[in-house]
Image (spheres, rainbow, N blue to C red):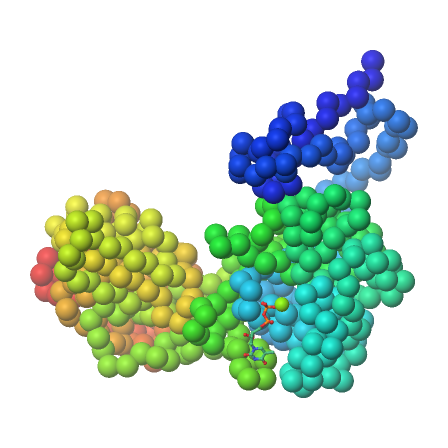
Length: 453
Ligand code: TYD
Ligand code: MG
């Protein structure tokens, strides 16, 4: 017998599901936020007409690769996996003021310059404001169509009529759907709006870029489910005081994730940075204790960065561990390995670690450079300035080879480094002319650098 599904309830503030209505959400503590939600999917058991049978195909079916449109902004195209795929939905997240609107206006102009029809809808700024910015960026003549609306129904009707190749909606938090009884920016609105926009993109073959704000915790405000709905999630990040901006693919159904594009914020908008290693190492002066150059890989590209450590006697009962741009858990592990396997204690010492230039380094391959920076800071001995380091440290203190060793060494050689410290057993083809130190474990690294085993 057909059974009507039990009503489901969800909190409009945090998105938590409830089986019954409540005045207060026990997940986030918000009052009056739990509402009944309409079921999103209708299965064959639901009341009403049955769904139709869909045609299924084989995995082997021959499809041409998705046609891609390049913008000509190399850094953006690479992060997108080689260009824009028609009908794809892309979410660009980032802190307020980091430059999302600037980037996307420049992207719209670049795509329009390549013959794509582009619509830029701003829900945050008036059309005149966007025009003013475009003129300041020298893009006043770009054939980009502009709108300043927030009602999603009007936006989709307009896009349906205009049939653009690319639509940019800035931002998802300002859009509202009149069928959802919640304020713009609330979880319910953001989720419903994203759902509408993504289905529009698939239906019409229009590529859609959604801008999303980031919460204090660094996640795109609104439910995680928006990130699941879209094809590609890009984060635009950077330090406030720095000019560098990094566009990072954290999810991409049409290309590699973890790819980065590097930009510099200038008086005339965002400029592409073709050689990020040179930029990240630019501020390095005389060899100083606590500085180690890490040869890393970001996406498909080698990037050299400087890891800086400072170790100082602590006045606190629990010494400070301040880490910027690296994983704090990883750093704790390395400190523990140094202490347990090499007999080098950091108890009673404050430790500060930083990646110069505002890049975030997440690779385990950075372990060796982090350990070397820590040792160098603690012993007050500078690491030779012509040396790069990379390698993963295991809990036993052994060093493990990492992927793409050759690419790392090539990039280092290109930038004038002549020595590298890397794990034994690494594939070192293409490193002619480089002095290679291949210590077996962390204790050997300590011995090698400071002659102290
Ligand atoms: P914006 O794109 O408005 O940020 P978001 O959309 O992420 O909130 O960027 C605003 C900042 O960028 C603002 O602080 C000024 C700076 N900026 C420049 O430095 N140069 C420029 O040419 C432009 C347009 C902005
Ligand atoms: Mg903006």
